[in-house]
Amino acid sequence: MSGRTLPDLSLPAHMGEDVPLLTGAESGGVLLVFVPYAFTPVCADELVTLVGLAGRLRARGIAPLVVSCDTKYTLRAWAIAELGDAWDSVPLLSDFWPHGALSRACDVFDHRRGGPHRTALLADSSGSVVDEETADFGTPRDLGRFVR
Image 1 (cartoon, rainbow, N blue to C red):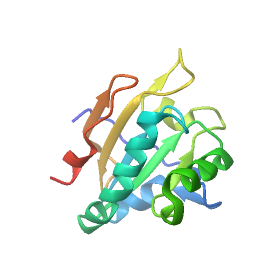
Image 2: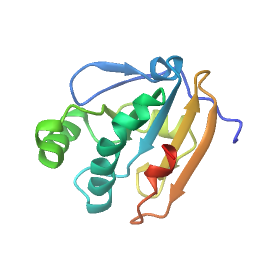
Image 3: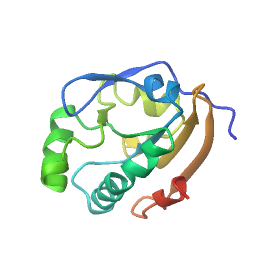
Image 4: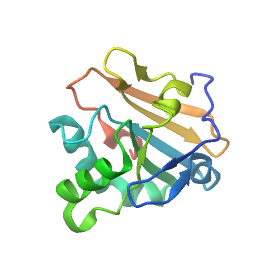
């Protein structure tokens, strides 16, 4: 689609471990859901939606991952607050340091706001981006389209 390929990076997850992006791609694909900020209404709604879709995505061989420039500790607190017992159902990856490295590599970094644009990238097993959805700041994406 866009000619972009995911970089071979690992990011710290809210559960403590580092998650290599391309590991998910090797199993069939990866859906990177970039969210501007934790603890904001639209991002919270999208997180809950993505957790609800996670089983269907995995059944299609797609690993769902949330990416934010917040710290892994902030992402952990956010996951617990928003998801309760399901806090560990989808990895939330911290693109905090070097600040926005993945967001910049994927060309979704919003320099004015200091975090990613509200963008979702679907990559195939080779890490090539095959689909993308971007929404304006404050506007939710239709994440369900990635399982239809």
